Image (tube, rainbow, N blue to C red; front, side):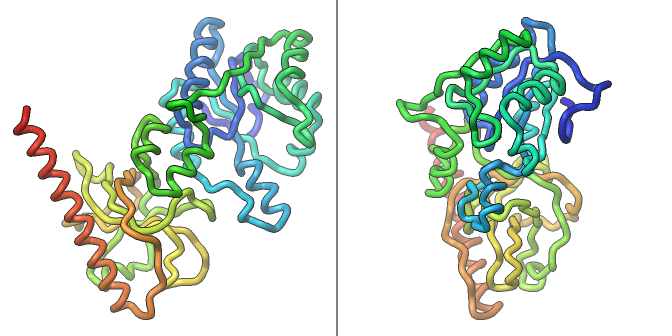
Length: 325
């Protein structure tokens, strides 16, 4: 899959079947849309393409207003989004920097300069409530009229539902916010995870007996925070059990930087630079600020024991289920 930061240059442009959206989480509704794009691209013998945005437009406007609380909590980082799009069979992704200039484009400029000249779109699918251009003045009806003029076909995808409930990024955020990982998996079509390169931290964990592997979280508002039972993929030939903290570490620093720290049970090999996937299984508690390191250490010990108990119970249930077969 080819990834472009902004519109491809003239030599890299190619006819495409396109969809446009934020695709935060790439949930089952997104997956249905992407499957239609892939089918159209195959039928028309063009590339399947996605245009997405960084930052999220609502995040951009929240920063502009000086109120980050208005930004949507982020389900997925860009790495995980791109991997999900690749898994869906997309050939090229245009990651458009959402800026004041882009936000100020008229709907007509967006159609002519971006869709027609910049992307050579031949087939376009968007959600039935899709809006675009300055002040969200453009809509699906306008796209359909433009398609007749410039020679591209437009389809609107009806809402995808799960048991009568609309599948949306907002629904996924709500499920994660309540730590309902069963519902999250139903909405996404797979367990929730975060991936990234293992980075160097302050190495405080090893001094208190709990060395952690650290992943930087680029966004200030991840869709969940707290202490979790997790499994780690990418370090061995099978997932490794552990306990993780996702948050701002209020006991040891006040920078507001979000970090995902994972203590992998009975694992001591170097892993800096490796790409790992952290699968979230259960929330244990919210993040807390402790008065000193001994109090923090005691809390981590309790968390680790609860996580170990979780895995023992899961293994016991698996053995019991096998015996019943």
